[in-house]
Image 1 (cartoon, helix red, strand yellow):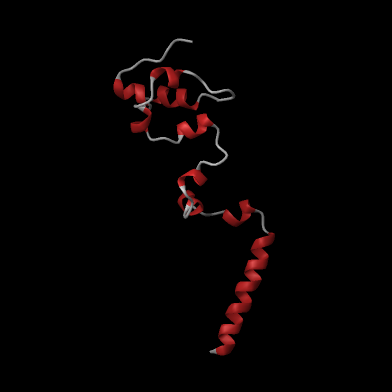
Image 2 (cartoon, rainbow, N blue to C red):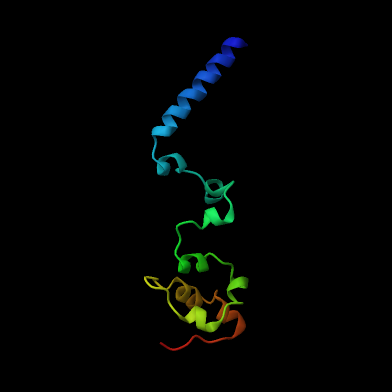
Length: 103
């Protein structure tokens, strides 16, 4: 058993060294999003996102609570992902019967 333990330890150390040299994309390849995010706090999951991207991460039920004015104003550099959601009928205004401001 001691030899098996030594082999297992040696293998684990070798894997740690190999993985330390791999780029993150390669280390995470093949993992489902839930697996890649497992163990991260909510603020860590959203780190690096713009305000507009963070808003798009909100569930529709939460988006319904935002004002029409807030949702109608595009963020600088936003490709209007919220507008695409609204056009598909999955955004908050579809469910509440609200209308977007004309631009």
